[in-house]
Length: 431
Image 1: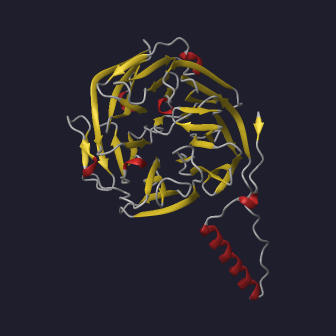
Image 2: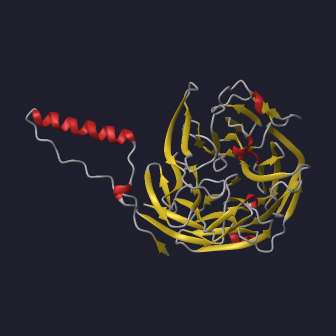
Image 3: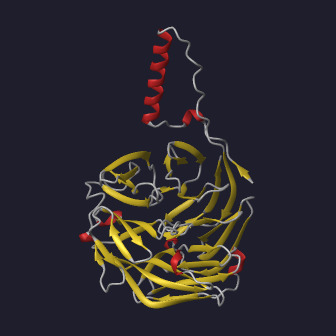
């Protein structure tokens, strides 16, 4: 077990509202003293978080556009990763810090091929991955039983053909379709310039995943785009989705949507009259959507969408010009009247090739973000520093709760998405 020093309280940045509140409190105390009353003792400073690296998974990398990335089980976490040699792995991290991993398959060495993994307690676990736009289908493996990583040993791999070259994969569980033996999943995939859904029915008794052959059409874009969804919580029957363009294509609009898992209706949250039935024979054109963020004079990268029940919001990196260390982590939130507000979390610092360290929402709407400054990387939760690292940190993935707070990558060398080394996955506890 490896430990890191607690964050230095002197290095914790305070939000402007916190500084204003402190100033007002001081003025109030002075006023009370002037009136002949004795002011109480000053409030103690907020303690720095206690941080512990409870587990390290060596030779493991994760990706933004797949999911679920990490789920909390009774006393362990289910996750997945890709190795530096292309091994597709199921990974478990116990509350005690013990780890276990099982190689499920191999894929081209490309961190876009990181697998998604979803575990249904008492029924089993499903993994899904692609070969980054080089094949007209994706791959799945079903492991009935406890859902632990070892249950994937010697399980067959099934290729699901959809008829167009696909990338990524976000697995959405459709709870209303569950039967005694089966679960239904919608797998969100990018195919060419479009995003769509392949419906899988997993039979836990036979250990098979079947595909109906109907690829459901979501959105078509004029340029390469990304979708990120709140795939971690589908119990309400809906998921939020944010869509945004690749920073290299010269477009920067970001859209906020909601998908109803019961009806298949996709709704534009900025203009709810704009809807789309995903069972129709056509895609919804992105040109019909109302952006939450319009075209910018600089460059923008979409990172994440905020989960319910908080108001809809997106995380982006806003660059004043081209992609650079001056990118600023920014949250844009939308209220019930459609009005937007924003807050920022500092600069990204140096990138790993074209990618910033990244940011993501926790289930409590906290913002986990990391970046580089002066040759060192740091991980933050909102405005509090959590962890310092000599090696670059990469892609924080908050957990749903429990003793592990977040998974974050640490990497020695990252030349591009097909060449990296010295990668590891840190399970970080913050108390």
